[in-house]
Image 1 (cartoon, rainbow, N blue to C red):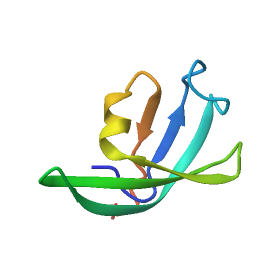
Image 2: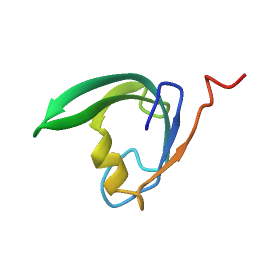
Image 3: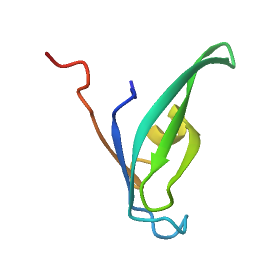
Length: 76
């Protein structure tokens, strides 16, 4: 599960002008989509200084473009 505080490293040069950017998950919304749960992830990107949204399943499907580093904000 992707959580607030997780870091996302985006490395897909062919798909987006902000390739090789780093962002942090700043907010997560749970939605009911096609009779199952989906999460809308809000990511704040450093290079663009913007916040974008992306569905969790889109991040999971594009493993060649994104690297997820857990933030461990709940670690004790």
